[in-house]
Image 1 (tube, protein in one colour):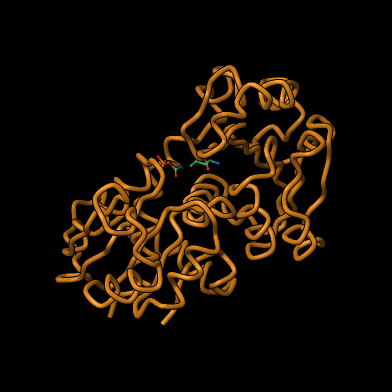
Image 2 (cartoon, helix red, strand yellow):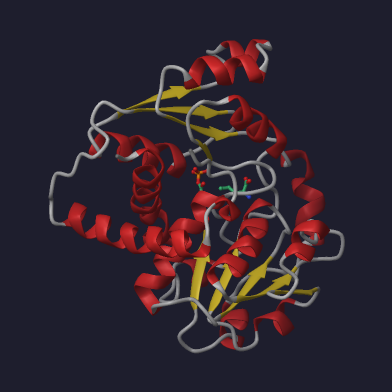
Amino acid sequence: MKHFLTLKDLTPAELKLLIQRAVELKKLHQHGEIYQPLKGKVLAMIFEKSSTRTRVSFESAMIQFGGGSIFLSPDDTQLGRGEPLEDSARVISSMVDAVMIRTFAHSKIETFAKYSSVPVINALTDEFHPCQLLADMQTYQEHRGDIKGKKVVWIGDGNNMCHSYINAAEQFGFTLNIATPEGYEPDAAIVEASKADVQLFNDPKAASEGVDLVVTDVWASMGQEEEQRKREQAFAGFQVNQQIMDLANKDALFMHCLPAHRGEEVSAEVIDGPQSVVWDEAENRLHAQKALLEFLIGE
Ligand code: CP
Ligand code: NVA
């Protein structure tokens, strides 16, 4: 049995196959073909933070695959009233075929996985967001082909998405420039583990020269709402705008996991412009996670 807590839980070869499969599953779906490899299977979905894309994509994936899903919020379960994670993991996993979790500390999902008898999928923690990277890698593949050997710039906060980009650089074989304000760098241990593929900058312009993909994310993540003001000041000068896109290669793409704040981390001109692939990126959450579910719990 495998879990998917970070991109490093799969080998580069497995990830490559998974992206190819996501592309195929998307075509099947677009041709209106019914494909139900998960008939009778159930996915439990524990959400301790808000979500639009992750919830809709996992629920739709399970329905389209012939199975079902259960949405569990801490407000309505004993998890929110302090039932130990270990006990909850044993009980929930005894009744379903996989568990998807969006939570705060990454250690919580690790604990859950340790006591779960079925695969556990990380649907975002404070440290990582690997499902989003599957969709991003599929999107790059569909628009530009193999990302291996390409150059990517991450501009903004050294957050969960940034950490998963670092993992992706190693697993998919691209170079990653990371431009953050001082004090907002990604976790040093995560950088160290992939240091051959990653370079840190404090100047977004220098980091963007000649890149093939420009990626950003919100300045204040879920759970950091009270830091919004302070962060707006710290990140002034880190907006992805046309000036940044002009430094990148001519055929560079722009990605953002969404939700986005136009006028903060990205200008409207860029996110709604011709280089932006954010809508494909969001849709691909569905197809990439179908490939993941098939890989983890299919026959
Ligand atoms: N990108 C992403 O995970 O979106 P949601 O928070 O809407 O699920
Ligand atoms: N970094 C953001 C990603 C949202 C999908 C957050 O954690 O809120």
